[in-house]
Amino acid sequence: MQMSNTRFATAIHILTLLDHNPEVWLTSEWIAGSINVNPVVVRKELGALQEAGLVISRKGKEGGSMLAKSSVDISLASVYEAVRKTEVLGRKNQHTNPRCPIGKEINVKLTDLFQETDRLLNHLLTTKSLHDFSEQFR
Amino acid sequence: MQMSNTRFATAIHILTLLDHNPEVWLTSEWIAGSINVNPVVVRKELGALQEAGLVISRKGKEGGSMLAKSSVDISLASVYEAVRKTEVLGRKNQHTNPRCPIGKEINVKLTDLFQETDRLLNHLLTTKSLHDFSEQFR
DNA sequence: AATAATGTAATAAAAGTTGTTACATTAAAA
DNA sequence: TTTTAATGTAACAACTTTTATTACATTATT
Image (cartoon, rainbow over all chains, first blue to last red; front, top):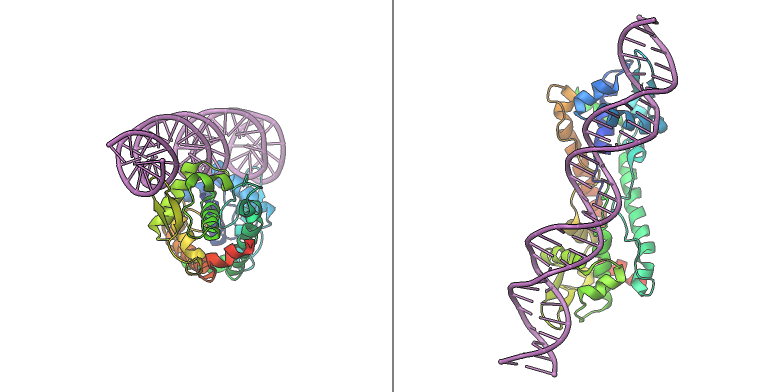
């Protein structure tokens, strides 16, 4: 189930680099060199992180990105929220049989369960800051 | 991140049907009719659930599947374990730059974080039985 | 004016997921 | 013993998601 993508890992990587280079406009190309992915992938992820208010970017020559606030004030939950796409336990079958008592109702009950797991994960990640994660590399 | 597949939902659906039809050999075709997926998909999932010791299947005429034990003794954690493929928070970037202090070490630290989230999820799902889930439909 | 960055569209390539066909094997029932 | 009807599984097709790439308009500094 879980995400079969690397978006959370990529976002954390980006943010950790930014935290380790405060007051510096890091370019997407430089960041991409550390993660070893295409710079456009980094720019797209930076877009999501900007929307979430976690980073600011500057266009033009000498442009780049830096953290929008102290890493102490960035929870991993906010990072997860910025990149999440589906629920933790995966997707639901979309065309279950309405004439079966189970098939008819199962998605309602799965929704409850999925939401509970998402809340739990959110709660854990809320207790962890980017700073906590990032300082492990010092 | 999360699973972008329907395996957990499918497995729960199958098991709930089996629980609601005790002592009956349900066929993959009948089950597939409730989920509205191909019977081969159901048989593949049943294979995983058999390996996990959650169901037993019988070949041949009058064959089918039933629960291997009481639904009271089947935790949702064991179901999740049977179908999981990646970690909750997704995948890691596989080719991070070894010449970057962050890129060099990040997967070690992400592994710690990912394991912690997986343990938390496992703990929650351990407290929930198939019976609890299944009886919601009665 | 030249340079160098972001933002983003469009598309290609790769990977993952689900669906389908086919059939050997198995076991009950006729 | 033959017929019937199920699983198990391989092989492959179709679809969806994810990642990579190219291209370039826009922006802003030098």
